[in-house]
Image (tube, rainbow, N blue to C red):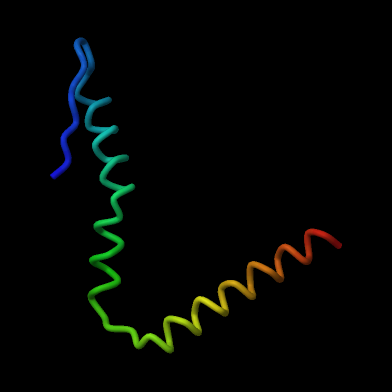
Length: 64
């Protein structure tokens, strides 16, 4: 449960914005989406390796 203390004179809009930001950082929604479908560990590892290769390729292109 997230608790957002509201400061004196602070508008509800600012407090709501802080709440949303804090909620996004917890990663609850991201984790729920990941758990909707089971992914085999080998497939997950392969995807991580492909992502790392792609990022490395982009960094190599920057250096050239």
